[in-house]
Image 1 (cartoon, helix red, strand yellow):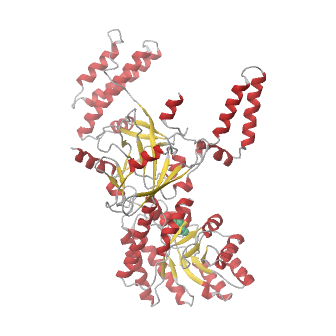
Image 2 (cartoon, helix red, strand yellow):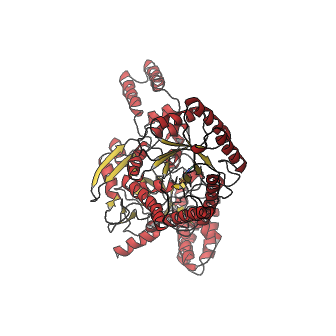
Image 3 (tube, helix red, strand yellow):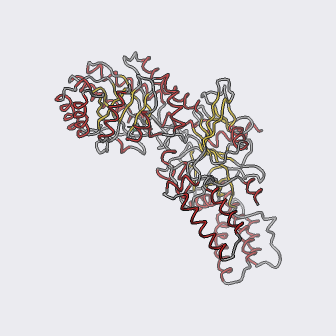
Length: 640
Ligand SMILES: *Cc1c(COP(=O)(O)O)cnc(C)c1O
């Protein structure tokens, strides 16, 4: 029986599909993490969350699993190396991590240490990224790829990086950049390796299609490319051009787009190589998708290929083109970031409030003195059946309008109005149940279905923690992390703490299309109801913003040994109110002195005494260190 419910939960939330071998449900009905991508080592997420409570880490928090990162990085590396072996490819894999995907230090520290064994490098696209990334002592043979638009300071720092022993490649976005590099090289007497970013005719697919194609913002078109080659030749720097680069966008949903871009780029590579340049690397950019909904389709939050298929196609096509051009095959540089980073992080928060619509008919019994319309509604409720429910639902709508009129004209007491509302929702619910079993397709019931959902108010900010849900309609898998051995027929949408109507999550992953509500339990009064947001390790943390002054959330880095033991849980504190106010230019001293001035004014006027004044001032000073999100319920109870 319980077993069946657990299997139902697996299907309901699709965890076996999007979990990619890293997440599942235990026989105890809790979400499990498999840090090595197989069930031999399983960590109970609910236990980690309990531990967080014990050590007083407040929700919301991010759980980071460096072992998932390590496993996923290895999976991707192995896919390419496997393909190279299979096709007897003559060349190496030199992948790099695009810094913009997640710049958090806790993340990059682990990424760099996992990357050493793969000779994994870094890719940056801006000056601050370059500056931060150069501090990492990566494998000396690993690449350090510099993309993006560059000024003189960027370029000079990249030259200095070569002196530090970094294997730097400056990828050119425009010919002016190249002219500056050539001049600088003349001045300092050496030159870093250079790459050219090609503007391909081929486009990606999905949300980031615009990153590719001739209309794209990035890269050199054919004319500019020829100009760049000419400039290099003229400067005697032909042997410094080592890389051709392209990137057709993130989350490529269709494999055929990967293939057509690959064919075009491999031709560009081969033609330039044959015209006497010293090319060695073909940089295929990023774009390997993450299957957020587990559907394995070309839907925008999914992709219709496996990583192995992606790697096989890339290797095969490059080899094929080079063979036909009769030239040496390049080392492959992959810049995939999303697929590397997404899985390692889980956002945990708890539900604080569930808005009720309707109520218990038993509790809201009508009395003989109540208005006649209430009795009519109760009759309607008992006579509704599978044949007449549409008609009775229409009656209910009419009752609702009548109730409004009666109340406005003063014929109904507020208590009667409340009772009538309870009956109205009971009517809707009953009609909806008949509708669901009827196989009919009626718009008004689909609409009703949406409005029936409970509103689950959760302790987090979508703007800070899952900004892509607002910016680009990204869908992340979301589910409760406990009670998965309990059936529920409640459905809800999730609201965040911000005072913004956008801060409401009402689209959820589904293998077919999108769901507009999530199956959720009714939280119990004596225990926290936790929900997890999965696959949030890519892009969200960098894009998150401080809307309503919510800052970066707390973090726990959970390290797990191969024997399945948790070796350490390190806490990284989120931003406190003081830090966020400072970002917005507030000064601590000014705030304190302004509070002080106002309080002292009231002391002088005899409204409060100086003890009261001191008490409040102490609180003011403590508030700078306060976590902006809601404190735990239990704390509130103690205070109250
Ligand atoms: C963003 C970006 C990437 C990473 O793309 P993913 O979809 O995360 O793999 C790689 N290369 C360049 C040039 C980028 O701008």
